[in-house]
Image (cartoon, rainbow, N blue to C red; front, side):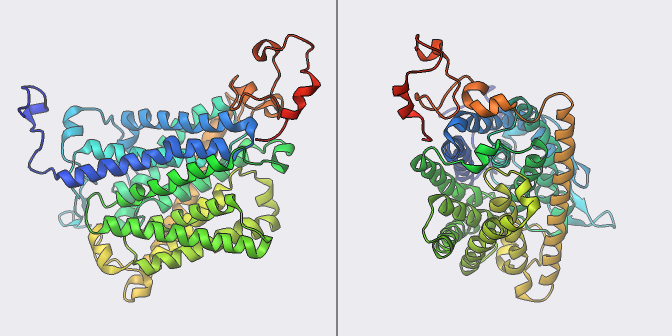
Length: 483
């Protein structure tokens, strides 16, 4: 098939010599899988795991974040995270919209890094065999899901207008710092810290920033905190299923190639998730006397978050170890430690993102520092001679680096999220009014998840078609329940 003249910048062929069709196809497939984790995965999960009166608001927060992050990402965000170096933790921002830029070969980092002698390259530039557009989109889906995971901490009370302002600010001033530092050519990247697919950049950041945001926004109504049942358990499982299956693209796409590391990462991801789910469920049965669907989903989530920082650099048996610890340590922090800590109870983290993502992501990063296998590290990492502490030699240094990187991510997210929210608070209240909190979706959006009256809905005779007294007939009270 001939290419029309002028169809490509400078007569760029449809398949340039450097393009590998297999790598390109897999990277776009992986990006789509990650996108499906958010849209519709987390949209469905959030809409169904909350109380009925918050279903629309929770889903909309995720929907808005997905769209807003994409536009901010291509306008400036991508090249702050993966562009030319400006600071050790930040790149120069610029649009990622030009045809020549997007159809050219992907490369990262964009700035060559030398040793102190100024002539010897320390970390060589990596050039995948696919266009820059694939890389821009793949990492957009990472940025979007991070933002949506963070939202889980402030569901059912954050002012939607404050959330709309928070999303672009947090993406630019918080997410891009972690992404550039660990992935885009920042100081942690060149130092040899391992964050294979986002244990720190995504999960630790979302958990810490979510917890910080929950502190500043304030708690839900007391009635919501005491009773917050999911409105649709089966739909919740469907959303969780999309999240789990989409993780194959999440970790399978991280090597930037359809190489041997990709299927190993996919297998390790599923092993860890399944192991963690079983361990969490077993602990629920042992401690509470019965299994819980929500508990199983939380166990699945911690297993996925824990294996993410090392999915492509650890052996399959190590994924089982990660799954066992991911199903037990976050379970303990949520079910036991949380109830003993006055501070943890004061901060209303709606979906326990701190435990399922911050604790699990930190755990995974530290375990990677112990279990990273040398030959696998050589396949996917820019720094040579990298290995976990269990493999002897210089491996102990990696564990120390993993700790330092975690402390940097934690500190930056606490400070940056705090400053962003304090700035927004000058113009927009962070928390909804008490009247809105009592009513829920009907007050915030003028929409309801189900065509049933009850559970905090503001009854409007004109909208609901009731032309009698201001309150509905007594016969309708049978519909007043949590779906």
